[in-house]
Length: 75
Image (tube, rainbow, N blue to C red; front, side, top):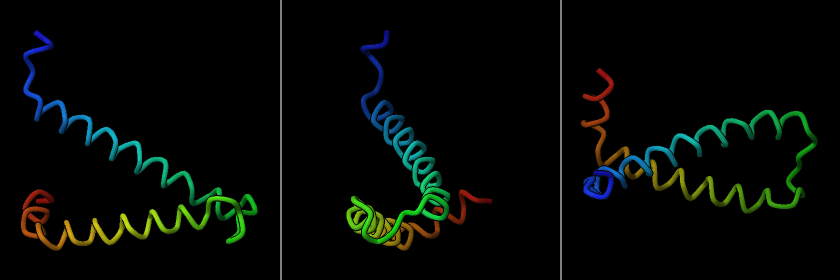
């Protein structure tokens, strides 16, 4: 039954899907920034910069804490 699924499994799936979609959206920004006249003054750019910067700090910390696991998973 659907209602008897492990909540941890469901949360893991949701997190993985959010990461997948976020990754795709961020990749889509590169050509927009390069070719559509987006500048530092464009509305929302400062917020995007701050958010991506904060995310990078968090990701760096996560990777450094679990570097051994990431290396093993890549093999």
